[in-house]
Image (cartoon, rainbow, N blue to C red; front, side):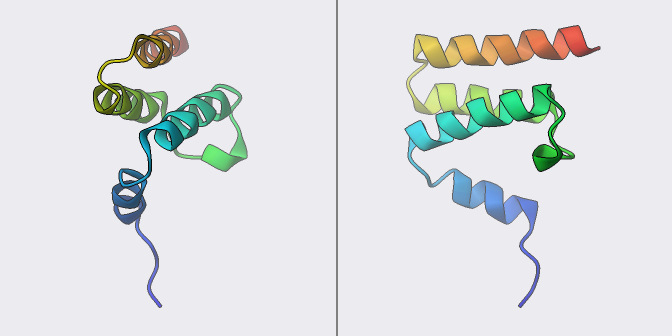
Length: 79
């Protein structure tokens, strides 16, 4: 059995419900902020990209756009 690639996981993730994807993005944001070992290699830029994509999937819901904006601000503050 071969290794699962990050790209394969990302494609499967996109098949999950939008609410699951939103919860996962919020959790990933929190884990990246606290430098958790569980998200090593994951960047705020990647989390932001997923948050924007989920916002589109969820018809630009205000709370999802607000989460994406918080992630963007965190990226600026971390520089």
